Every structure is written in structure tokens, then in C-alpha cells.
Length: 138
Image (cartoon, rainbow, N blue to C red; front, side):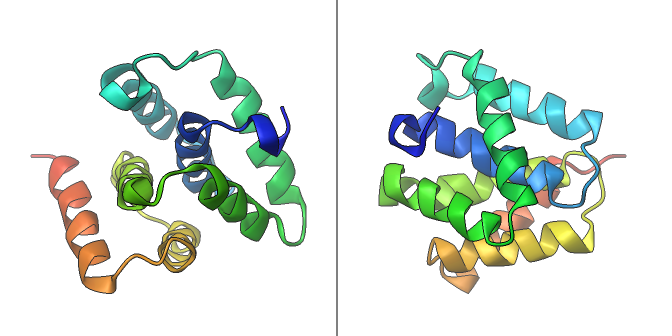
């Protein structure tokens, strides 16, 4: 899969996989969260879930490169409609919150994603708070 064949849905999956691997520890809760999101949200209604493995491979490869994160965010911006930038950020926040803890590397990833997608800080804070609220435990 080249970046030319990266679909908008692929880019959302890539953002979610990216947050999961950003702290170098892929947790089961995060993977389950990604799978549930892809299975549940209407924007993935026609998405071939088999592509997730290939998208994850691309993300893993990019994380091995020096400017891989910039390349990932560039690929996302190239194919994702701007109206879905906040959605991408929200999905990343949901995956980060899925395991109940957000590592420093995940926070840096979210900050860089916010800047790359030009998401207003106030909007980002609201999105982050919503993710925390959805993933609270008793």
C-alpha cells in the first residue's frame, strides 16, 4: 500500500495505531478500542477491516524513520477531509484513554497531532476531556 492508496479510513486507523505505538507498548485495551471503533462508527461502514494490518505495518515502518511521524501526519492530511481532523484527534484520544493511563509519549503524540491538524487548543481540551469521561472506571 503506498500513500496514494491510503484512504480516509486508512488515515484514521493510522492515527489510532500511531497513538497506540507512540509509547512503544501496544496494549490490548488499545487494540480492542481500535477494533471496536472500526466496527462501530458509521464512517467505517464500508471499510475492509483486513486493511488494518497493512496500515499498522506502514505506521510501524514510519515510526522507525527519523521523520516518520511528520510523514504519517502528512499522509493523514493529504487524504483526510479537513472536516474530519477533529474526528481523527478524538479517535486518537479515545485510544490513548482506553487503557486508563496516558504515557508522556502519548501526550507528545497528541500534541504533535493537534499541531499538525491545526486543532484549536480549546477544542482539543474539550475532546480530551470527553475521552477521559468516556473511559472512567468506578
